[in-house]
Image 1 (cartoon, rainbow, N blue to C red):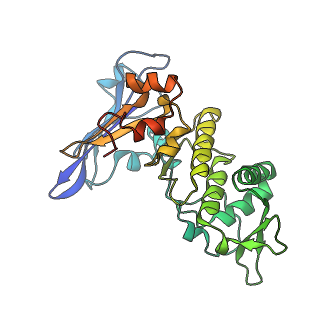
Image 2 (image 1 turned 90 degrees about the vertical axis):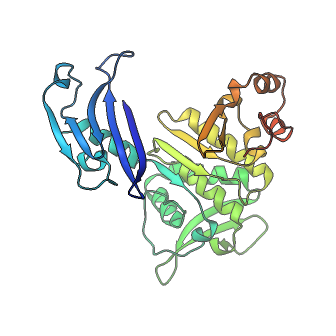
Length: 306
């Protein structure tokens, strides 16, 4: 399945100028994908049904005209049962998780109540832990194991409901008789907890996007976190993790096949090159030189990233 989307300014406002969905016939690995959605400026055709029918490309199409240029065809048609392929794509995209964790949001005290999914900023992390402990005890234990490896001395984390029905996270640490709560925990501890919750999701997201996870983390934790992301990406089939980073320590834990160099040109267009496709980088990493060191020593083409 191939989804193509073109966005441009329409009367000074961003709008969709082209949107297409194509699919090969079932069982085909190569060959021309056939359209089942083809729109330009909100108008065009759509083909219903579950399978690609070659003969149907010339007939059985329905005319489509969207009322607003800033709306996507998959958002509108993805609600209609007669278009199961579009419904499937919309459902897939809606399961994506784009994270920008904010430690201060995790320090808030939400109302008690289990929630199955972590929100974008991590403000409901206590609610998710409450849900995991009740419904997925093994995943809950794995979260504690992940965090214990990252944070020495941490013995236990427990969701606790206050008298006014708000949710607290209680952290028990070795050497301290009294527990700590999320309001007094460091940014790094809360970030590592949030990512542990995300990586132990019993219903993994098909795509996870994380922006600059290294912010607020000790150097060793950055490398450990990168290694965890890499392991989960390999073990959980169907889950793809995309991380943007400015930290050489993060890429030290990765292989050249896992790292892409992103740059903008003078016109604002971004280009991407896989580190493994740079022969010099590939040869030096095979000799044991870490990627972060190559970054610092200006081996990523023109030096420091733009």
